[in-house]
Image (tube, rainbow, N blue to C red):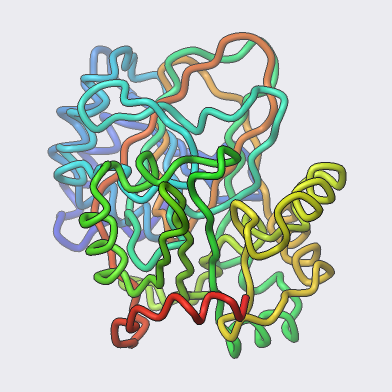
Length: 353
């Protein structure tokens, strides 16, 4: 393999190749690159800390790296690894899924029921800021299923029909959420605070419109990116969660009940074009199909660590049986390149949804 870091000499590279081996899980896909120790008792934390530039160079080329057979076993060691390579860990502060703190800023993976799948997505791409790096650590492998499919966001961008992609890029997206209805995460969990003032400040800083409804309900909407240009490679990536938030993704019986009981305006979450107009479910179907067509699936092994460039690679979860424990850490906060001024607080405009 080529493209090793310019910061390291050829002699350094030869030395590295004596310590590790590089391969692919599938000969037809460079996603993920697999790194294994080539010598006994090689510490992943120590090796990675000394070769962070080497890791970065392959990450931006491949999008995902799977570290296998290094014998990592503890969440605390996993946290140490992330800090050694990517710096301070990030808090999961503006949440869309339930998680539990495992150790420090290491979290459980999304705590959805085991029988449910989680579609491919880029972490926090429903927001104007997100982690550049996301790390996964497999502590306990499910008896059956539970894989974490991944896909190249550059290939997803090119696989989406051009007319749909251009329509989304031209119109932009707006995510609408309702908290405090008992049907989704409460706002206290989403924003990790019980202070309305803290929530309001976050919304203003994030160019998010908000409205308090009654004693304890909150409604927000935020216009966000459809695509982004990767800050290192300059490549365009599909970077949003329209296919997760859109009401058409709910099971038909759940969707029909929610619409009849609450109306579209009060759905726990939904997504529109940025002008408030509806998105045709057929477009969402095409986007979901394009994502799945690029999916790479492999079984976890206990001790596996996977690093994703969160802009270059999407991830999901397959249904599973038995106990499964995959923990997650995030690093390197990044802000959208969209040039907008903070929106004025205009709760009455929410009625246009």
